[in-house]
Image (cartoon, rainbow, N blue to C red; front, side, top):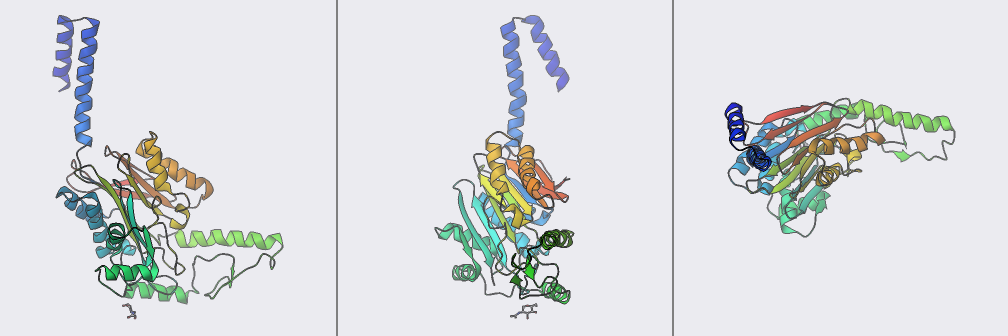
Length: 369
Ligand SMILES: *[C@@H]1O[C@H](CO)[C@@H](O)[C@H](O)[C@H]1NC(C)=O
């Protein structure tokens, strides 16, 4: 293609060589090149998800390609992850809390209307993302939690109450109990190295500096212990449907051995996911307790609005967290409405999945810290 174009260009130059004509021809050729690219990148639908949750991405893609809305497609994708119990960290039967119970956090956001529905620490109901969609579509609220979220979900027709434990989750929990409930998420409490009940250590009881230092060290040590291997994770997914509308969704059963009542970043809008269809979307995963303090996905989308490309926006959001919490682990994937996507991560190697019209199947991208 390059040769004939150049030949045409030179031919035209020879016959008509006024500066204005050259300029017009240049503009014409430029618009051909740019026009071609625009057609390619605007070829929706598009699905992006944290981790190689290939089946979930395929399910969302199939829905979106078949003409489903972005919201319904993202619910389809995340539901598939819940059913397959992706990595054991999504859906029922994984991540027991200190009492051995599994609870569900989930969120859905419509980037066209900026409507959000979410559930946190929901008990006895396995369909997290569907419960989140019910909150979004049938209430004026944004977030329902705990047993009241379960009652709402069941009253709106979702199956339950269901036992969310599995033999694996109970076995994992029993081992942890046998290991003196270590590691755990407590700090500055007594007893230090065994199961609860715990009581706060008062700084009055430990006024010398050595003691305070010991507590700071202990916190760090525990983090290394329990974060060496991933113990909490999330499916966070973005879909751009055929109309160009964007939605995001997340689902997780939270951090393993969490303190009962803990809600992570999963149902926190702007933290685990965010979408604004004028700009694009973002999906995040990692140490939710830390990440939710920074609303990294809100940051990413707003950075892209101000002109950053997805890669720079994702790196900037990760960097802001890493400067305060150098040991944190997290990954972010950003996608703009042109369909350009990029990831950034800290503390681990992160992977994300993409399915676009130009791909034969889901592709997995690896991002190094
Ligand atoms: C829930 O399921 C787990 C694992 O199968 C089992 O150990 C536990 O007893 C069940 N709980 C109830 C209340 O039935």
